[in-house]
Length: 462
Image (cartoon, rainbow, N blue to C red):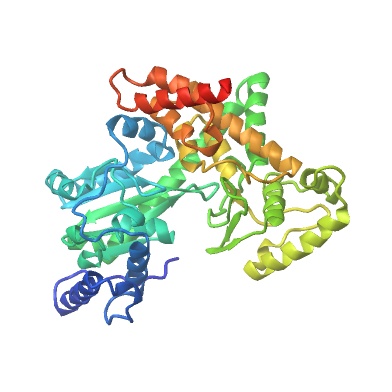
């Protein structure tokens, strides 16, 4: 299941030598030579590649601590809505309780590397505060460089980082093991589970322990969903039909609830805020042409397939010829064949042969369960914003309008301001007006909102 070389975890020459090699690599970081340096004996390739990514992302190895990405109020609201909240009792029982007297910390973070819970040995928690290993802090590779939580998310698999293998020097006294957490049904990346401490944090059995805990938590999440489905099925027909319609709608939009069990988020389609989609299958990623982006977006939202005539209607304004569509499908099949033969769509009707999770479907799924904060984190802008395909316009309008409605109805001032920063909300008076009403009277953010409203009023009057 995993293909990694574990670092030495006990005392002795091997451990000391590995740390010396890592420290030597840090000297090259000082000389700004590391990104182009030759292989350094003893430094794991996995670590070297992570350091190179960290350097390209402008992470600073001399930063003493991680930045705080969520303040207390934001953190509490975000944690309540996060899907990992429901499985925290499993994490607590299997990892947190045994760690209280073992010199270990257990951290659970979201899919972008922000820590949501940090629990365990009280004395160690106080020490970890010195490097801001605390709830709300950003431990992504882009921010702090190589660390188990951030690198596990970047690689999509379990990882162990020992001492000086960390990119940030303030973390050299620590070691850590982390495993990503995927949705058990859709495969969507939900977050990461981490153990941090001294040498025991990277013992060989620690990785297996964290993997087993993640598997148990995923199983618990699936059980809870099955129980919920059984409860809904036992309700009166009118209410049950409404719930079934919602689940069917999620399936049509490619939401997490519509994916088959066992699918993996590594099969994904990024449509939001992009004119050309990014397709990722089995760890390989390609940028698609605008037309191929539209085709895959439409097929991913119609899991039962589309005939050539139906797809043409959704793809071409006016009366698009099916011959043009067939030529595009031939070209798309060649690209997918090179990427992964199992990804080539069926024909008659055109239908995807593997689950493909579009980011627009994730947003819709989050909105349907009331998690608008998470939906906004995923939302990077309109679906294929320049596309004129009728089916894409409908999908774009639906996702954008539901996102706006959720933010206006239930959003906090911070959520509204984050939404207002999106290109599609540049001229949205209502969003700014509601945000202004929710902001505290002494908030320094009020001035910028008032200035925006004055700008919009002047533009409208002109």
